[in-house]
Length: 87
Image (cartoon, rainbow, N blue to C red; front, side, top):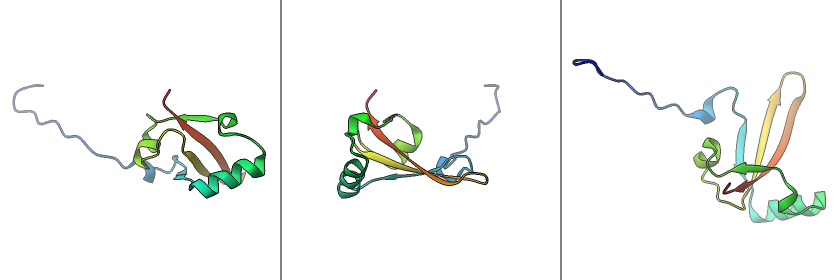
């Protein structure tokens, strides 16, 4: 940095960005019902890393199932599920 220059950093809440869909940690009961309804195991769900910024923001832990709600002007509302993994 140059002498006399002050660096300004902004803290941005990524969950408020229009391109970031809503992320929620499912309760144990909701997760169990989902897996039974789909007749799958957690290991068969798509994965999301615990290092993902939204996973960190909602304080999800490895093994949690995340419900992601996306809104689209053409497709309407769609829901996706991801299981949190270490790597």
